[in-house]
Image (cartoon, rainbow, N blue to C red; front, side, top):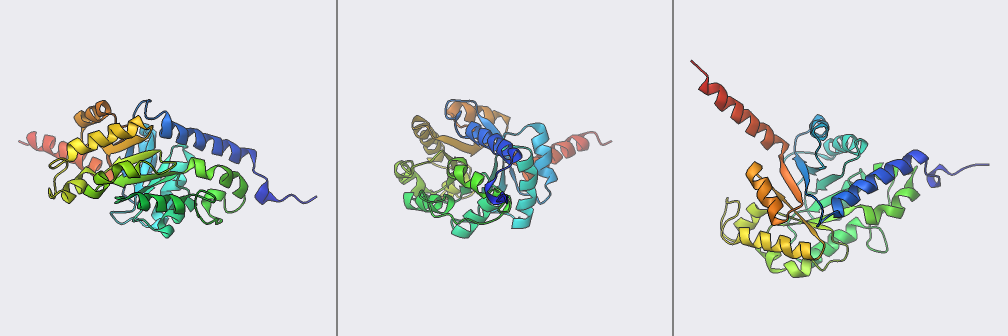
Length: 276
């Protein structure tokens, strides 16, 4: 009797799916009451960057496609390493469009971070593109997420509950429309971009210019009261502790290139002090 492999998930795949689901649920919520989760943003091409970060014990990794020069092949190589190590892999997509969202999820991302979300209807559109019917209109392909069609049924049964759609709030309009944004069904988390938010308030080039520091903390606490976790970048060890006290639970420890430069700068300065 012939068996249709496309509809017969293997035990190995079920194990992998359960492991990924467990990780997503721990990243999602344990929050907003559980411990903070720490991760790194990936901007360099080599998947060795992701592999090394995971060896040190980061809770998640985010691959940045909005800024920098990473292409889809670079991202796929990072995902192969991250997926194999069973930690959540997120992609900050270049912009809000169907192609970017669908490709990111099809090649194995566990979630997307969508930049410059300022209105509820923008976030609703991101959910539409990122979720299968009936919640959304995500198309069904035969890429990595479904093991090239070999495990389609097993993936699609849980995909809507196990893929994250996270808005990046970084404009004055997002502050003004925040209450409406929080009302989007299925929203698990939000991320803040203080630098761009500062620019939108007229404080170009500042990290938390004008009212931004106050807005960001207020929004984080408002979201937490509704069971929605907040993420933000911490620029140093003191800021990590500050953000934890303020209630942020997805804390970015830095981007790979910035962490490398910071360490190199420190070493160079120390070396120069020892020169005779």
